Length: 118
Image (cartoon, rainbow, N blue to C red; front, side, top):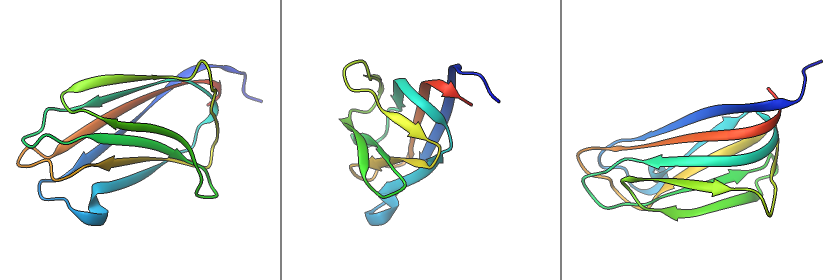
């Protein structure tokens, strides 16, 4: 049996120049189990001024957390002190861009800090 502990996991999203429509949205599985303590979202400085929005979606398709759209060229911290969120190992993290990032493309790095079992 695995012990309960604090740990971190990283997820990276890459969007190409010219993305539009459905390609503005990427989802990745987050096969982690535990309570989220903190999420850091780092958005690059793109050619075009776009925003990136993170959401956690459960296995039933329900959005259990919405990080709202965040500006480019900055890091953003999402805290879960007041309203904890629990990952059950079958959730997905969805990243949505507001538009075409231009020639640079777009990269969003996400670091999730949890307390649970790896």
